[in-house]
Length: 117
Image 1 (cartoon, rainbow, N blue to C red):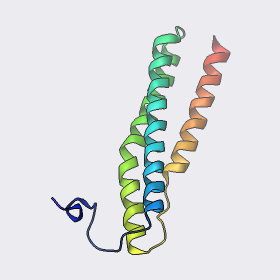
Image 2 (spheres, rainbow, N blue to C red; image 1 turned 45 degrees about the vertical axis):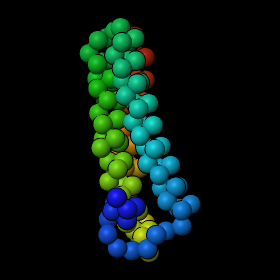
Image 3 (cartoon, one colour; image 1 turned 30 degrees about the vertical axis):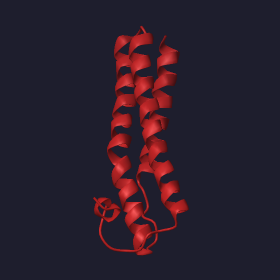
């Protein structure tokens, strides 16, 4: 199988390898963030004893945000790769706002959990 057969899309020109690698590092950073949130959700569920409902909500929020990040990481990588190959501006990502809002929500939920216990 030739390397041309495994391209994520057809057409365009090969971008500078440094940009391709930077795009890949960004993709991996999104996945690391998702894994960190998943680990945080599991830790909250296992280690925060009371109130159980509040810790369950906090753990669920961590896991849900992790799932959203993991599910959107590859499509974002692919859109950026296609834009670079086509010589177009890089697409904007709403995920930055989602991650920021999600983390803010987690911080508020954690603060409430700390205040209650």
